[in-house]
Image (cartoon, rainbow, N blue to C red; front, side, top):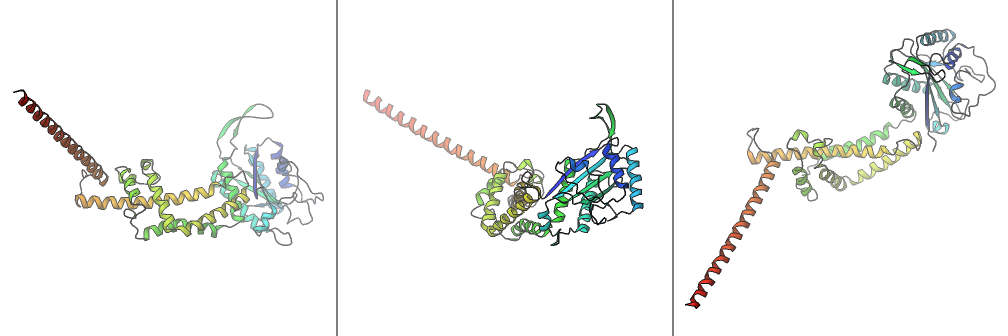
Length: 406
């Protein structure tokens, strides 16, 4: 399945032709290009970046530049942008280029294209603004960078071009080998984090297709199950299906109760019992809600697959949410274990505080050790008694034999 949203990114250094041509693109007169520029090669997406301002009659609605503040740029604003890009070039700033392209049928689902085929450009521009600003913040360039963008229609898929520079560069420098000349040059680092670009694409997709209501429902089901557990007066220590598991979990927890957190490695030995308690609890008390949750998670995974394609990590979404539920429920069980441990310890040793007072687990271990010792003692006593009886019987037999001899 082709992704509904695709982000392609690259950068050009100040000495490259692409940087120079983009400055010309900003400053060029708004010529009416009658022939449509068709891009067959993905690499051409960038090489034609600067070739057109628009190619149809309506100059303001086809490929016009927009910025952080302006929906349409006039000649004065274009001249100002050109000067800033020239300053950035002179100061060694990279030119970052991003192209966000869309599956047009998906845009129709998102109500971004109406029945007449008209794109909601105002909404698209605002979405791009949010995504670009978040990208800049993630790369620590929110106060130093400027950018321009334009919506293009010259291919089968509507796409948005974005160009970003730093008039006064703030990024660190590094020695980089020039691919064309083979010489090493000190340049500003241009590569952005992949996580930044992923978030930028996700932000665009999520703003176009608002799934807030569905996400809230999933969150309510996950957190609601935990809240329901807290509200219900269900004693896991005495509940028939969990009683044995509860005691086993308690016996495998560390002595320090502050370590009783589901994500801590210190409870690894107890975690299998806690997970089983959670499964039994949800199955017994929350069966219908869990079925609904699985349906919603499957639907959301399908939406993510449509947005980002087969190669994305959409299939991890469901498991991540179920793991979140398991963690929350696991901590709820640990809270009950902690309360139980405190109450039983108090019953055994009173309310007097003492750093040397053993925990309930220590009490059980001590009791278990004592029971073993007592049982072992009983065995030894029984064995000694039987040995005594045997020796006594043998002595009687010997005396009897002595009687026959006399």
